[in-house]
Amino acid sequence: MDTARPQEPVKPYPYEAEEVQFANSGAGITLAGTLTLPPGKGKFPVVILIAGGGSNNRDEEIFQHRPFLVIADALTRRGVAVLRYDCRGIGQSTGDFGKATTADLATDVEAAIAYLRTRKEINAHRMGLIEHGEGAILAPMVAARRGDVRFIVLLAGQGLRGKEVQLQRQQLMAQAGDSLGQDSMRHRPADYLAYDPDSALEQVRCPVLAMAGAKDLEVAPEDNLVAIGRALEKGGNRHFEVKEFPGLNHYFQECTTGLLPEVASIKETFSPVALGYLTDWAWKQAK
Image 1 (cartoon, rainbow, N blue to C red):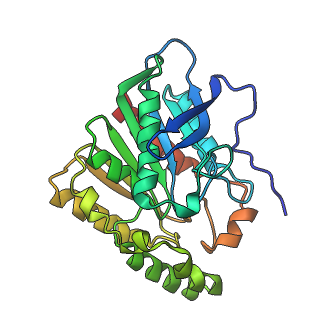
Image 2: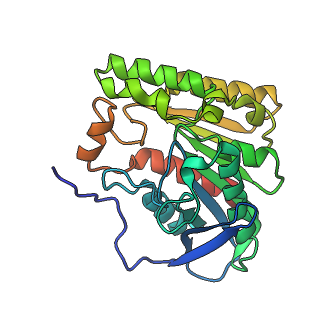
């Protein structure tokens, strides 16, 4: 199998990449990550990358692809600082991911925000959240209760209840000939399966971009994009956009089937078209 990942940036980077740690004092844990800072003197706008849908390291690594590294590189080259971190209990972060609720994980995001507010290079008034995965519910939860989140981006995010998302996932994977998808329900915590994203989305007032790949078998793209838009509109938010990209899978790669094993054989880590759209939109909101 060809494991070349040509989109990954090669050191030395034309920007600073700093290993950092910050505390979630309420949870008694320490989170570890990487903060990339554009060249020159700040204060820089900043984005926090949030991994969704399970325990992930700071690069959201899968099959030797590191999509968060690629996204962070693209944004930092555009002049936006980026913080990405290992989920609690993963990599260099302490804690126990398996025991964490969705609400617990949201406090990790808020700990990241609190840390960035201490950095002199960062403009805390120009802060955005970008979240990927079938979770993609943490960013709306945090943005709904804070006034200092300037924008959020949901990559393959859910607009339906967790149980509905999982049932659709089973159906889509079965139709594609993947029986492994049938076991997905048993691995999801009860709070996720019962969670209704509308409760947070209807309270989000900042600009929102929701992106999905048309061949995503993990989070049905059309139904969830429609639901996200409907909830935002119901809450009175008119500053949002939903965008479906043809031919892309859950990880925003050009694909054939959309099935998980195919991810390993694809050289592309993140579609340049989707990446360009994401970075352009985020830059416009952050500047």
